[in-house]
View (cartoon, rainbow, N blue to C red):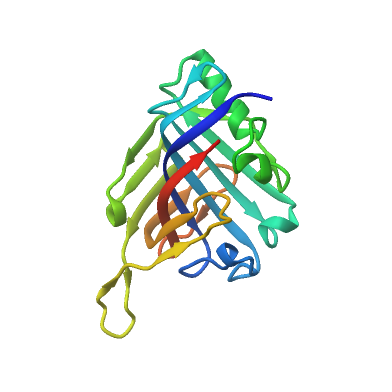
Length: 197
C-alpha cells in the first residue's frame, strides 16, 4: 500500500439545495446527484512524490444517490505537475491510495485523468476556481430569504468523507463543459479544510 497524505482546502458544489442532503445520508434534493470537488493541496505526498501546491478535481453524474452507484465521472490534475507528480495524482484520483477517491471509485466509471491549468483563488465565500476552459466555479454567501441578509451556516461531520467541517455557501456560477456537462449555478456549494492519511 502506498504511503499517502494530503491536506489543504476543497471547494464543493452540486445540484442540491443548500446544505446538500448527502451530508446527512439522505437522498439528493432532486433524486439524482451532479456535482464535484476541487482540491487544492497545501501539503501531501504519494510515497516519495511531493504534491504540495497542486490541484485535483472530480466531476460526476449519478442517476440516483451517490452510494447507489451507476455514475460517470471526469477528473483533472494540475498541469504544473511534473511526470512523477502527474502519475501520483492519477493514482490518487483513481482511488488507488485511499482518501475519498477510494470510496468514490466504487460509485462511478471514471474517465482518464486530464491535465489542465488550475486557477484557484481561496477567499472563503468569495472563492473562485477555473480549470482550463472546462470548469468554472464561483462561490457566494447564502441569503436569508426574508431579510436578504448574508448567512454563514457551517456543518460538523465527524464521519465526513471529504471534510469533517464545512462552511455552507451558494454557487454564483458552477459550470462544467466536458462530457459530464452541467450548469448548476445558484445551488449548493461549500468549502473546508481536508486532511487525509
